[in-house]
Image (cartoon, one colour):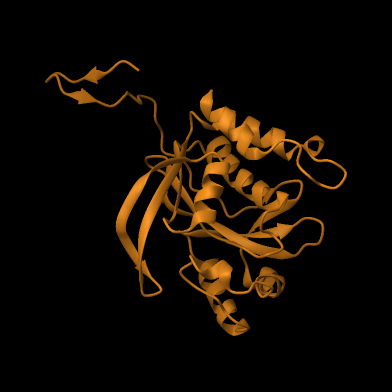
Length: 240
């Protein structure tokens, strides 16, 4: 890209002359083949979601700011009530299409429509959701809303730098690592260095093709095993 300068000879960023602020994400469902994302409601989702997360040994909460709830249904419902009332973060329940069970949740947060930047976070997946097609389709649906429906320029993923599974997930999903923010915050009475990742609108078309190919039923054999990995497809998308 050719460098641009202003009248003083100083380098400046590329022009975005026709930019218009984006809309905020709606409290409406996102429907896929294996999952649907519904605006989180305690009345609709708490019972099956609590059952799902209670199957975990506690390790799924290590890098989250809340939990584990250790059988505390009242405490869990109180947390979900806060999520339901929140506008930013904006929470969605992850509901299994085949059974109607809510198996986890995720949110959009740090929503900046004026400049087209939004983050995905508070990703909480029960054992029944982890490492499944449903989990991947959840992330795809959220990306598609951000880029295809709303026209955001930048989609962010942040995590504790020590959270190796989250870092690996970001890479698999096609996010680009951007750097480390040292001593960025505190949670659960401990330090967090935060790793930053992003996807840009210019990168999305190739990544969308990668997700579409991976999610296609023809990519799985009779036992549900993938024929081509998403990591391979997103890496190819990144390389052009």
